[in-house]
Image 1 (cartoon, rainbow, N blue to C red):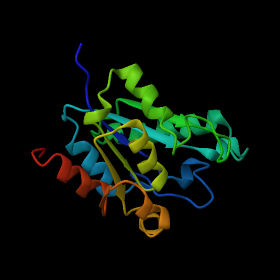
Image 2: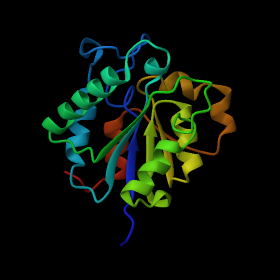
Image 3: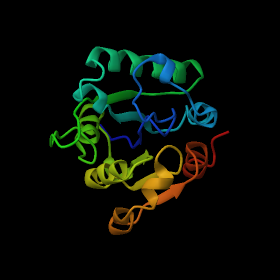
Image 4: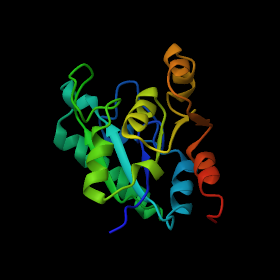
Length: 186
């Protein structure tokens, strides 16, 4: 069975807004309209669409894992209701500093997805708004890691670490990134 490529997407700062105090309830969720439209446009790409999201509010004791999963599922339902396709979603509840293999910048969620969905990481993309997203994608061996300037992206691009990492691409928004990656989509 041949392997499929994937588009890995971070969630907060990519298709919903980041919150300084974390996404704790549905009232904290605000979608980027351009991102919802872009996800609908790429519905038929021959790539798996997989969300990989750190949710340290769980590990910090701010919300329960059950709440985080329920919020994530509801967010994905809205994407799907808007004709967007999400094939799988992985959520890491670990807080920073725990060395948990699922927590980006480690590549655990991407590697788990690759194994469970028979993915070709060398032909895949990782799109996020943080340098930890870039690092996770690069550590997993993706073809291209992309930093969006939405969410925390503008500030992250100015950090010294951004110059130390192997080259990565930046785009202003998810819509522009997906238009460039998949120019033949309507």
